[in-house]
Amino acid sequence: MQTSDWQPVLLLLVLVVAAVVLLHAVSIALRAIRAPLHTGPFSGGLEPQEHPLSRFHVRWYPVTMVFLAFDMEMLFMYPWTKVVSAVGTTAVVEMFLFLGILLAGVGYAWREGAFRWS
Image (cartoon, rainbow, N blue to C red; front, side):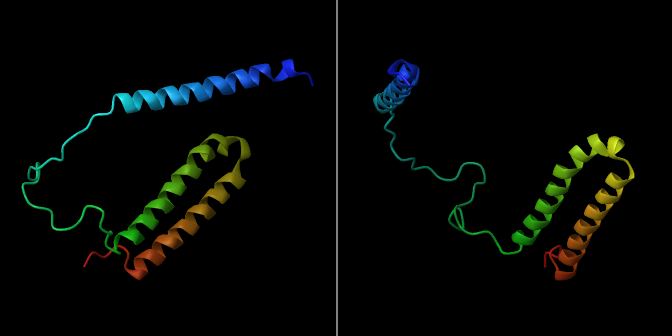
């Protein structure tokens, strides 16, 4: 390979590095220095009881897992609707098998009390 083959690549690399340096310099030049805000709560009207980055209660995690299961169901059902007419009965059987596995997961979550809030 000749050096002329690498010239466009080197030129693009130089342009990208120059753009990054220029954007960083502009961000430093236009940075706003703000004083901390010393006012009370805005919308709720009450002082916060805990830190905003505190942990979620443990009962939210099973709900999250159930949501992700149904989210994955929708992710697989949209493409399935496109191929069900071409594939035929086997696609319908596979989808009902998939839905049965998800229903078993919901039954397990129900049995373990993931849907109880008390």
